[in-house]
Length: 374
Image (cartoon, rainbow, N blue to C red):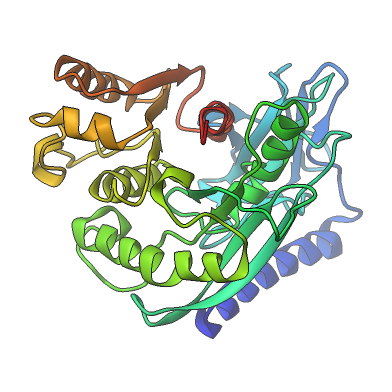
């Protein structure tokens, strides 16, 4: 991480801490928020005695709050499904993270507070009493972007350097960074639990920063940004992983997948390099439509995907797409899948209950990983 980004993140966290201390000083003892009840409902609270209107937005839904005599605004949401949720308050139109909750989605900047409603028994993404893998953090120099960067690596329980492992390159969405799949997406827990159930092959998972530092048209979504990400992956990330870990170095044991922005990156990088990846997954990508300004032509960016689909079928062991059933992108994704099927391109497509949210992406990772390297 370069010093500018580090100082920006430190300042952001410091600003939140100052706000929290200010709340303590002006308004008394810290209140409890969020509070998860036994019936899986959640109570959100924030003290803002001078505010005129306060609400909480949780998973793209807005809930008005009511103020008590002490100036504490509260609302009870649910009961809700056991799941991890993102939320933030709106205080007279200003987005505010929960000053009583240290759990947050940081990404490029603190953006959401986090709350988990536990399952009973624990859900597939929750910490369970099983052997656990290890998360490693590596710093490296990106020759493609000329900056220092950071990546996370998951190694399975009882990792053996004398044994070869396949690799899943897992990419985050817009606004996030290399921490997202571990901190918010619970990727390590998902892999640990599936391994304990014997449902997946032991693998190494590499979680990189998919953001483009340079000013390029379209950012990390655009054609130039995708190429920068591909160059960084092939010239910097993969050599680092192959040097530090005992992994296979051929396409049969290498996968790439991601969510939203990372799903688009995985789609374009993976399909443009079928000699390097036999397994490609894209979760809730906006490249097919559902976001402003998108005009998707499969053949334009990936020549032969429709006209020479047999060549892709021969090269790929798995081409996987997924989307949330309430996501505005789902209709566009379905149309693309129909086009692929019409042109005899083999594609595995799944939808999950949910919008453009982590619930969908956790399920996607769970199912995608069970199909890999078999």
